[in-house]
Length: 168
Image (cartoon, rainbow, N blue to C red):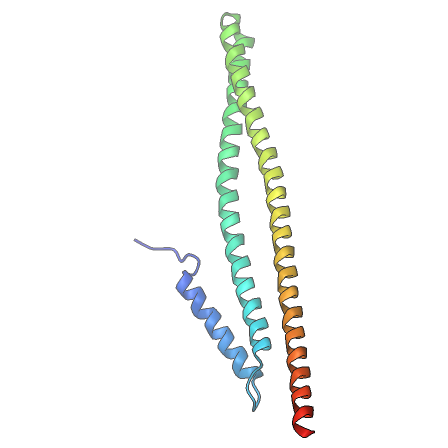
């Protein structure tokens, strides 16, 4: 059996990310080494890119499956409507049955379109909620950084005052 190459495995992705980080550290380091902030920014960018790529692949696969199902259902409904419409045109004996079947197919088609609309609205709400969450996280991170800065300033001021007292 001839196996077709698929997307990289999680272990392979991790290996590529580690190599990218290693290359970045080697390229950017100096005699003192690399600052933690620089390394942190690079690692965050690398992880963000990997997560975005993975999320895109998952979303695309899900959309492909959903699209195929919707298309198949829509085509089946349209064919049913067309077939029973032709039956009504050629023979009036099945009029009530054909009308009921076509109504059912039309309702099914309406449900498909309704599901598309609901999914679109749900996606927008999810995106909005995610954006709000990231804003809250960013605000919290900024608060922590401000507190850390104030602590360092207080520590520096305390050390200076301690040095002044030792000198006198």
